[in-house]
Amino acid sequence: AITVDWSLPNNNAKMYVNGVYQASISKLGYTPTVNNSRAALMIGGFGSSYTTSMFQGRLYSFRISSYLRYTENFTVDSTKPYFPTKPKVENWAETSLLINAIGLETNSTDILDQKGNSVSIYGDTKVGVDSNGLSYINFDGSGDYLTAPNSINFDFGTGDFTVEFFISFNSVG
Image 1 (cartoon, rainbow, N blue to C red):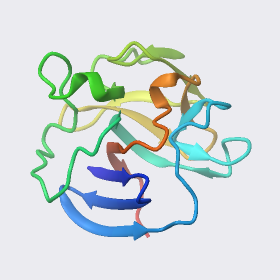
Image 2 (cartoon, rainbow, N blue to C red):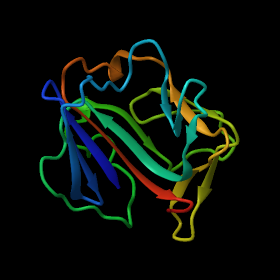
Image 3 (cartoon, rainbow, N blue to C red):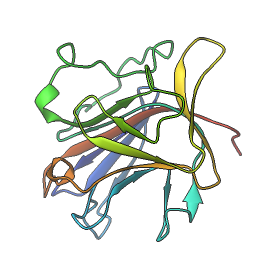
Image 4 (cartoon, rainbow, N blue to C red):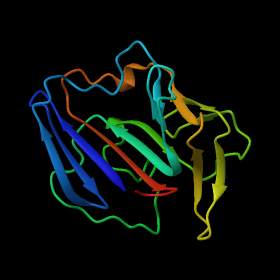
């Protein structure tokens, strides 16, 4: 699991990998935003055409929250790489986007996340099941990505927010 907590207006970010603090970034010189109110939220790549840099691997789950979820190391259960859904999840009201690959149709072009956001699938992004029986969304690095339309749910202003996801890379290095 990779988690990035942004603390604004201090402009500090902390990154955790599998629940263990890895690094922080301070005073970037700009204010990061999840969505600038002009474009769709994109997952799986970035750049002017969404294809400048593409993710290659499996996405098991993705969550954006409008507060700092973590301030210290935490425990991750890697055998269950999905985020809990309402009513089990704490701070459900502060969860802005929640995508779990469990139960997704294999030939879907659009999905609804657990918060009711419409998410579109592009390229030949596929839903699959790994050898452990865990569902994932596969990105092959060649034009695959997801988008959620511009939404007030992603505009946090100067507030804190957390972006976190369970992924596995096709290759590392």
